[in-house]
Length: 79
Image (cartoon, rainbow, N blue to C red; front, side, top):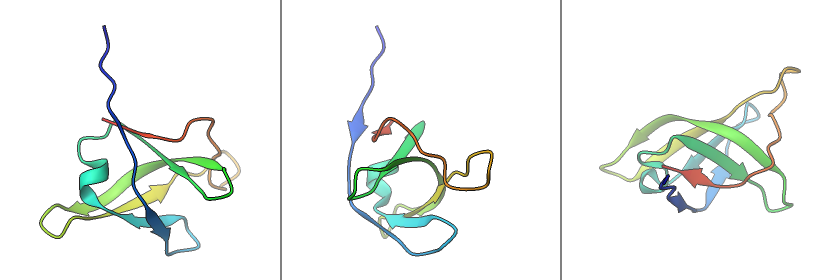
């Protein structure tokens, strides 16, 4: 069987390019990252960088073929 661990946390979009700051422990070891906004929209993302000592990570929302953040149907962090 396949083990899928999901986590969730809060974050803040701090850039018009779709950069998000969150806690590093939330995305540690993640193989897929999804960002879900308060209005329910969900986007694919990748971990751009993390510092486990201060527990901060930066996510980059991934663009679709049109260069806009690519909407996704799932909303989770999977490791």
